[in-house]
Image (cartoon, rainbow, N blue to C red; front, side, top):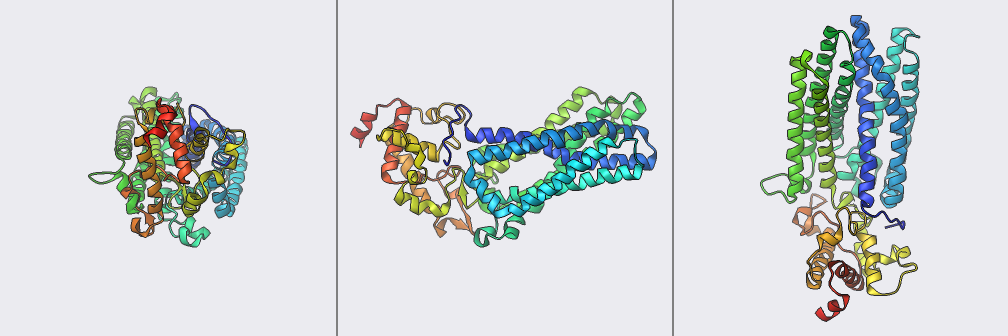
Length: 455
């Protein structure tokens, strides 16, 4: 709501998601790849295993391209995207964790430097020196994950930060360690799944089977760590969040389905990996590709569950997905949402429909488009003015529940008790509510004139 952006079709949230998904996949491989490659080369030197050493060498170029090139570009892309589409949340994260971001950049520079040195010094330095480089890379990459995880998990479970605004309280939040364990497992099994393709390029059949079994073992370890981390993460969530997707009657069935999906995908992935472990000579490209897709499916399912469980917030119990703070609700109900987003009415006619469109862009456009992804026209199709008025009134009344102790559990907003637990409340004056209704009526096909007669 801060910048006049217009992204038809996909909307702001989808654009952030597309950039973030790309970066997350490559960044987790960069972390896991360093760990697995370090283990592989260490064992190769210890056992004098040339095939295992060649596996690390073949994979190192991909690691360089992913980590220092694509990872860096997509990382900058995330900053540009969230800075434009969600500047309020970006500002909050920077102000709260500026030294965390700075520290992560130090480790990233070390990561890039050691990755380049590692690739450039194959067969040019002593084995111990080369091992030192890859272990330094693995350490730097993992430390980047250690820092970023604190900030990512904070957005879902800010913990005592809500009261203290202290760096440590937000960083070491309730889901920090469980999420770190989960992501470490994901990094390891993704790297093993990627490197399995390189193992199949080995010409010696006995050596190929040995490499396939080695990487399958790596993936089993990663899967077990990830599963344990996921269960721990789930248990560490506040009751108000767990109620959204756990139990006999979850508040958001779609999230419950996502949970079932990701667990089944992990089980299916484990079956494929166990097949590679027990019958490495039978491993082929299609089987390896399916295993990688299943690994992606589990990871993607978890990210969707994590993002969905955070709704309607961008920072849980603090800032809604449209950038409005819980602490601003009462003020904006008096002064109006357009007092915070004044640019929206610049050059627009002073009529209810234009004002309603501005209110929509200020409060709803972060998630909804008009006709594309989560298109509002389709969602309200068939609704009349009376129905829309009832929905908006309920959503406005829910704003008071976010600030009421009656709807809090252990300091957390009990969103499972709300009528619309996945959407921010409507915030604004009565005039703005009527204007939004007038605009929405135009999308349903009802004439605006009929709205006034209905009231």
